[in-house]
Length: 247
Length: 215
Image (cartoon, rainbow over all chains, first blue to last red; front, side, top):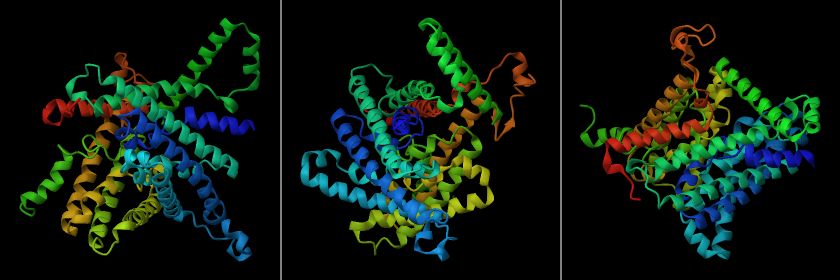
């Protein structure tokens, strides 16, 4: 249960699809002019991610991984088909998107019209394929967590596009320098939002820190607690900074 | 450009300036930003995209008359995915460290909107020669932005270019660091890429005011 909760918050805030890894930027920039369309697309992304990540997890587990074909018989144990994963993942995704398109057209024609070209483009939304590829590289251990990962990444993307759409609706009344209007200012705002989201990085430090430290902080009074947290954050910054330099 | 007619030359020239895939067409931002913290990764990414776009555009253009339009997206995806698998395997074989740095972002070339965008907009309606030039042009336009962003992020963020310490050694305090210069750690974190691209757009549109969007 705890690992589910951790993965859930981690995928929404810390590894946010848009702000941490820049996935799905094309539709994020193009469809974020109005909140209502943004909500529609965001919901579609949550759904498609929630379906494709577990499906691709199954494919990865029983078809692609090194030795995954062993269920066919012991003579298949040496096969490693992982180089085929791109093509299989994208085929799954394209099929699912087609399905979603048919369903949305049937049940909500108004949403279908407002999403326009962007519904088929979900197939080439990097967030969807990225979800599956990250699921593969991070070795998500079981299908429940894969489902969780898909849905929570989708929610993270949804929150991001909702936030930027709301800001862009407001910014129409502001006096932005002419060359920055539209795309330029959206980029910079996204950057600033990304910096904001970086602060969630300290939320789940989990296994990096020794347990005694966290216990001692809970005992201290609130004021000291803040100071210690700041110290820890500073340390982390220094560490990541050093790492960056070393690279 | 004696080899190319003026029309053909424009296919390569336009994406580099006034019709840039990233800053004007807003395509291919997805995989572009995350890997630009180092110049080397940016260059490799640009070359990979150049290969996939050049070859992909020709292939799609050659088979454009036999693809049923209903399933064209899947056909395009299969073509791109195949080319990307080739790039990925080559990188894994010859530059393993780099392919670890780029991790899933090589795979994400498949869903790079530039590629699908140019297939749809150009390769499906033009002959292989022009499609090839268009692919090369757009990939170069994409690569230019990638390299500019990578250059500034690596120079300001780590004080290096291609891993060579061009501004002196920050620990031994040589070069610029001896007079109190500090690396800007802000440029390393992912959101800095967005801000750098935002500034590039700002500069480009101030120089060519015809590109300014209506409010």
